[in-house]
Amino acid sequence: MDGLRTGEVAEQAGVNIQTLRYYERRGLLAEPDRSNGGHRLYPPDTVALLNVIKAAQRLGFTLDEVADLLDAGRRRHPSADLRQRAIEKIAEIDRKIADLTAIRGTLTEVVDARCDSLTNCTCTDCPIPYLTIATTRPSGEPA
Image (cartoon, rainbow, N blue to C red):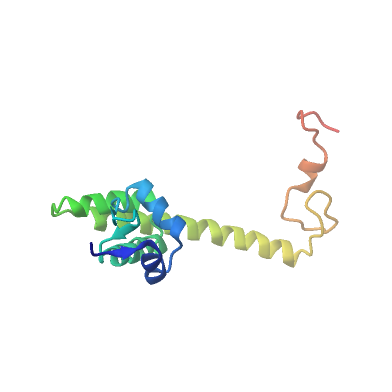
């Protein structure tokens, strides 16, 4: 029987063996054939498929999204699915960038104001609403 053993696939794809088994359980990889000795034997294109999966993850797609994209590709129907998902992923990334930009701005204000405590800051222009935190009990009653 021809095929690549688990360690060979893992090494060539730059993943660990547990990742291969996890991808099998998730349905991203088909269950491989077995040798007479019971060793998994993966088809040679498994390394290329793993590279595609890892590339999609680097682009921000979750494993569920990758599984859906692979499934759509396996059906061999012409589809704008990847294009539409990429457009949606760009919008998601833009939202994250906006959130991170806002967080960075607030952190810059904290640094510029020389804030020294999350709950009891002594700086005069603290951008963090520490007074609300410091004067409220867990039940919502004022201290």
